[in-house]
Image (cartoon, rainbow, N blue to C red):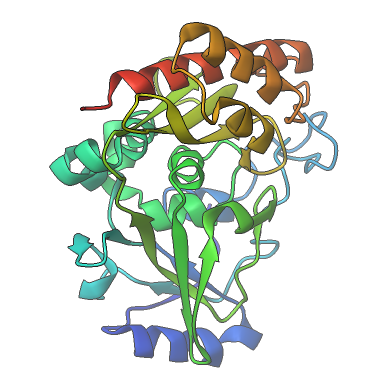
Length: 314
């Protein structure tokens, strides 16, 4: 089922970056948790059926992925200590190593209190087995439009640290994906950290996923919201991210701008949801129709905003 390949297990980031450059011409990919990569490398189980979306692989019905041919080398990052863990820095940032598992996010008190939307997104990812193995870095680098930790990362204003032998660079999460399974990450770069700004006082966030099953399902629509109130109780800023309604996770700046300076009321949340519909570009597929997704965008945005407001401690 799996093609032959060699595993490289570096002990440091420098060693990993060196190996990634060295074996580039032979075919090499980075291995995080492997919950997607190893599946993608298997031969198709269903040889032929109609594609489920424009541009999908006619053999599998899925969007094109980064691994077009089996790699000769996998660089496993599991033995690099600094690639895992959650840390709060003095400037007011929460830094999460790319190899931190989804289960670690779910169980972290800091994440649940300070980055509530991320914890909720992690709660809805896969099954316990997948969460125990899968990593936040792998989930984001897969660049699926419905990636469960990617959408809240965009809403929360995260930055992604990419490292190579050429140096470091920081990319805003909302600019990382350029299409299904495609990112701005260069072939010699490794995602090392996901850096979140620590929320200001009177701030709350929420992430809601709509799927056809309660678990082990890709979202039909997902919405993540971040709200900050001023001292008078008005909305001073908002960020709303959507998943599964465009080729990449997206922000809805018009809906967020509408909320600025307004009361955090159900009526305003409903209106923001209606505005968000005009900012998304869903398709019809086997999970849901275009019209259904548009309707659910309005519903999920208003609900996620209400939940974010309810989570604010004043």
